[in-house]
Length: 333
Image (tube, rainbow, N blue to C red; front, side, top):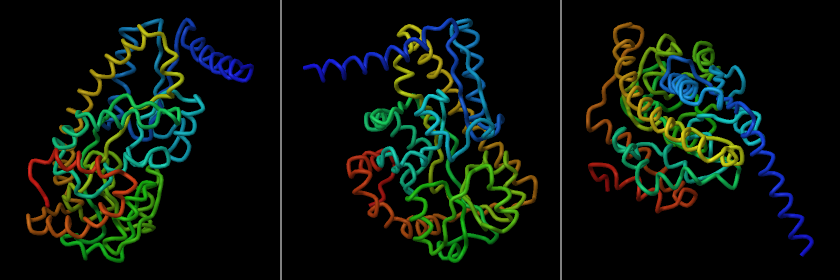
């Protein structure tokens, strides 16, 4: 009985300490991310900061730290779990040590297009995944789009065999590692801030990125060929430290959630517009040749990578994979 009371007291003390932080005159939320201000995620962070300042002035202050200026790929999630930073928007590939289910977003050619991704994220299974890391002190607040990924390289990639022997930069993801292994290529894990230098030096010969990342980081200047594969989705999950988030007074948290919904809509719309615009800018620059796949070539890529689905079905869950397949307009049996 005494042991139970001691545990309950410890839990109450933890919650009280978070609530005390939340009840200070001004609640400070540090929002850190690894990309530039002019990307969809960067603009979303600034919009969140502005709307919070307008609507919760004096109650909440948001501090935004872009371009890995506070925390980078390697340490941002641990910083969040320790409440050294209160909000992040990491790409979905970063979470596999906390939940395997989110690996569904990394599976190559799982989603036909961004609309299919939208449908999955809005349905029950997609919403459920936002809460899949609460036991790790991470709570998902929203999905933010960056866009569908394209494959860039120092040579033209028209068929799967063209990638064999090349080194591709990837995020720290077992699925992405397996994806390139399936093509006979080598995956090299590298922080996003180092990608330009890695491509420029020849440390890696290729990468996968949405158009907005390719343009904002000037990657097209060091990648002579970009194949419009749309083979995967690079999305982010806006997250918070769970104990911090649930320690915020209910009324303020409700207002923050409403702002996040508004920002999410704007970010996702802007991401689509930015990718279209940046694709045109890259094409107009003449520095990189854009290769459009025929339906037959695209199907060849899909079939070459499909074994990766089976490889990770046990970890991700067949229910999650089936829910993702259902949202595509066309069946790919």
